[in-house]
Length: 105
Image (cartoon, rainbow, N blue to C red; front, top):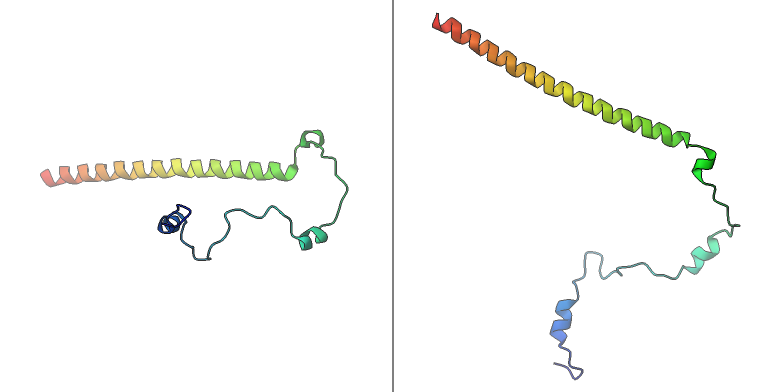
C-alpha cells in the first residue's frame, strides 16, 4: 500500500486493458480543431421550412412505396412456398397410398 492509502495493484486491476489500438479515449474531445473551425464556411442561419408546408418528398415516397412493394412480394413468396410444400406433401402421401394398395392386391 502506498502513502495515500491506495493499493497500486488494485488500481491496475480496475483500469481496463489496452485494446488493439491502445488506450483510446471513450469520448470525442469537446473542443473543435482550429484547422476544422477555420475550414468551415460561415453561413447565415437558414430558416427551416417544415416538410408539410412543401408537400411530401417525392423521393421518400418512391422509397417508401418500393419498400412496401418488396415486403408484399416477400409475403407472397412465403405463402406460395408454403402452398407448394403442402402440395408436395399431399402428393407424396397419395403416391404412398397408391403404392400400398397396389402391393396388397
